[in-house]
Length: 319
Image (cartoon, rainbow, N blue to C red):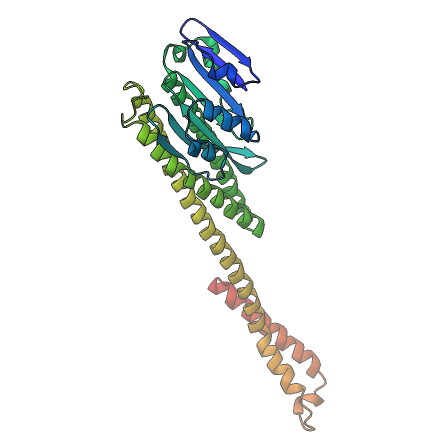
């Protein structure tokens, strides 16, 4: 567990093994405890009990319900959010929870990432974040998650651009699978963004005693960013739908081209089949069968028919 204490003049950062080092600390500075990994359920429940946190909160922290939400318990605020990590082109949803007190913050991450490293650096560098309260720290942490959303959306945008180029060059089933995969990723992101928007919107309504009136404007900015992300996701979904239509049109055009070629060849060979059928009959008296140049005449007539039909099709623009 990483334990950070800070104020305007100083900052301490160390790893602790016992939760009593945090719960019994009477330091007046702002305190931030980071817990990475939710496997030690006893430790998390013990921490919540020592701080007077409701058992429903610890159940939410450890539970599988991943929908972002916010709960106000007067003495503290519980926020559940979700971070989206892109690993090897696969989306990974990480549960991230926060418990905000007047002078301390606890963050719970499902596994280790580098999303909050920038916040640690800002505290280390003595930025304005050190001069404010724990509610500003909550804003900084949520803002880091939202900035990660923007990075993810940018990568998906680049992937969509690449798919558009591939689709125009050579539409095939692999590209179709990629388009469906990106579309599912966008749906996943949208399903996360809507409740995250509600969380940010609630934090910006000045309804919580633990949120300073000055800080609510920053939470409004987060809410606006999330709305922007939702709009971008919807635009990308429309682009993916358009690519699916383009794919189907391309496949339809390919099918039409194949059918056109087959139809042309069928049309060309129809009169030849007719001639071959007549002179293939087993009647005894067919005058042309006795001609010296009958066989040559047949081929000349057949070739002439083929050339005339090719010329006609080319004139019509069918070839």
